[in-house]
Image: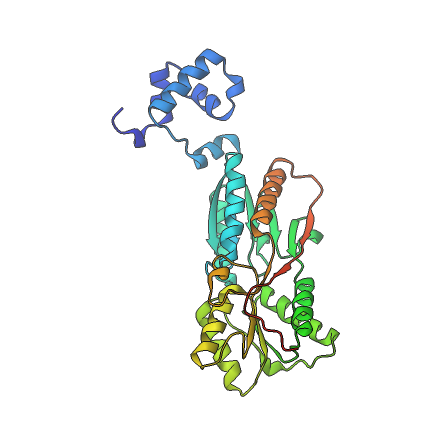
Length: 335
């Protein structure tokens, strides 16, 4: 066979001397085919490098073994570790993954849900920082939420303890003598941004510190936006001794903006990031940040969506992940 990439199930059946339905059973339910026939068919499949079409297979078996991951953007690097954990666990069970970015756009997310429905996808993992438009999906599609609580609707939920994380990082900064703390918050119009701003304010109030709204600036989740937001904060004449960034990607921009003004990190202004994204330890100076096991979360989320696909009536899961400080070189002690 010279055109291996165009081989069809009919051609495999002809070469093997069996019906196409037998080839299909070998692929989808090998235990239903006697060993001699199964080995013969598998031999031709291997020889011809035949790759079953998962969408076509899904039409026959009612299961495509495809899971969609919806993220809010491709700029936050922690999503890379999360996606890697999800994909590697799915592939261990012969599932495939497709990924969409909603760009935090409600209309686009509706279109994504429509496309997912058309593709006969078995399950959807929403890591979107908007409230997912899951009602647009057919009831038979398994759903898992990351960092949004869907438990009231019976949806498996995996949540970061944002409030606990901010309590730890503000406690850490205050212990080092910092009381004038700014916040480059990410997009305050997004769910993630709102949660972080609320947790930041609450943590300051808990310690009797003034919440200066001029020291809280928002920025979309990119280093460029972090740079611009930090310049805006500092140009107001505010003099924070520390700035918290809503993500490590934002922190890159925060450090860049501070340095561009001839101010030193951490000698003049300390910086602390969020998520311990890849490369944060290689910044100059290495970034102090908050960490959670994003890869491990991805693995558990993948297990959950596969379990939900195969056991749709099982009790829903709610799991919360704590975050811890990774201390490096961007926070100075003022005491």
